Image (cartoon, rainbow, N blue to C red):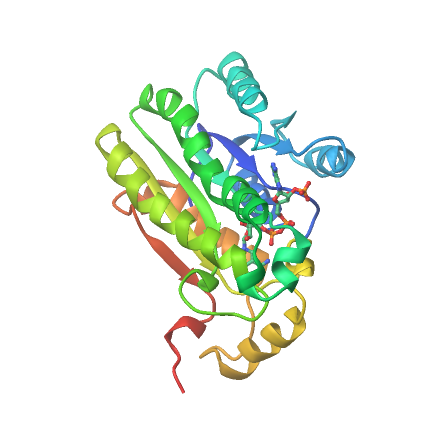
Length: 257
Ligand code: NAP
């Protein structure tokens, strides 16, 4: 496994113990990383603080990714506390419930804006702030989480599929921009996992069952398995990998009829 003992990582997107970002935080902490975990507003602050208390070397800070001020404050805190940043995990995504439930043609202008802002633009905003801190130590690794709904149509995924397509394209453009500074940018495309975000997609249980029936591994994936793949991309073993979307979905993406 990766030795992250001298590394400082920012992890955005922990809501509760089922969050993919939480599994990544646990794996990174187990490899010795110092972490900064964020929460959106006060609603989930207690959750994130309780979870963080189970790990060593964690700072908790508020960060709504739609707020430039809050993002600036988090990076100021990282600068003050650590003076360096080695990796960022971006696990924030949101779409209004009505834009996930209604036919895609009914997607509102505001719903489209919100989904793309929270779920895709936020990666660019984080990367821009992370780059100077990473560059100082010769580079870093930025990782986001995506889903196959970016390329294929999944019932009720709708505007989130469009947001994920923008996110994956952003991974490639960011990787191109930041590669000369030694900063890698990648995504993991995870198979479906029952989390808070997934609860917003009606028919999600049916999607899970389809993976169990049709994925080459005949099962769904667990957050710990996504976290193991994240350790590869965040740590030294992934040092030549950038601009990549790594499928961690039991092979489902390869299947036709
Ligand atoms: P999750 O636990 O609900 O995590 C989503 C996170 O996004 C939550 O912490 C949520 O915070 C945060 N978020 C939403 N709006 C935000 C904002 N404005 N500012 C900051 N944070 C915000 O669900 P998850 O499944 O682990 O999702 C993590 C990532 O994995 C997402 O990008 C998701 O699309 C992706 N993914 C999930 C699956 C799956 O099946 N679960 C599969 C592939 C990819 P609040 O709860 O406070 O809003």
